[in-house]
Length: 229
Image 1 (cartoon, rainbow, N blue to C red):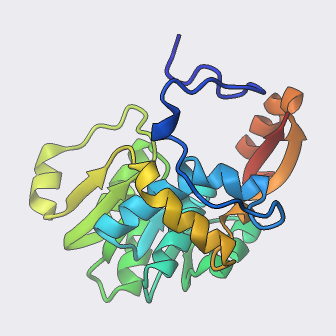
Image 2 (image 1 turned 135 degrees about the vertical axis):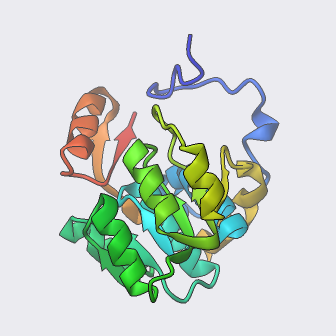
C-alpha cells in the first residue's frame, strides 16, 4: 500500500487526527465552502510555507498549485509577480490573484523573458510548482544570483547539474509544508473573505467520475476538479 492510498474514497481514516485537524470556532457553511476546505488540506498551506521562506516574484506552472502560489505571494506583500501561463482562463485567474506580468514562453525562452522583465538579472524568488526537469531548470535559471527557488512540485526524475547549481548562487528550499502551522491563519483569512483560494476548483464531479476529472485537468479543460461523495 502506498502513502497515497485512499485519497479518492468517500471516507478516510486519519491515524493521527490531532496532527491534521486544528481547533477552530464553528464556521458558517456559506463561508468555508467545500472547495475552500480542499485547498486548506495541502495546496494553500504549501504555498504559504514556500512564500514565507523564499518570497515570490516569478513562478512556474499555471495549475492549481502555481496559481495558489501567486495568491500567497500577493497576500504576503509581493509587489511584482510574474506568472507562467499559456491558457487565457488561467492567466485571468492569475491576474485576479495578483499577478502583474504573464509569461507564455517555456524553457530557455521563458528564462529569457523573465530576465527581460527583471533588467537582465532574474527574479528574486521563484516558485517551482510542476516537478519536471524542464520546470526545475527554468526556475533555477530564472532566479538571480543570491535569489531563492521554492520547489513545491513533487519531483519526477529531476536531476540537478551540480556545477551549474554551484555557480548559480541560487538557494533551493522545498519539501512538505507544516500544514497545521498555517491552518488557523488561513481559515481566518477565508472566513474574513480576504482570500478565496477555492476559485481554482472550476469543475465539480461526483466521486465515481474521478477519472473524468483527471482527464479534464490533463487536457487543460479544468484547473482543478472537486470530487463530491
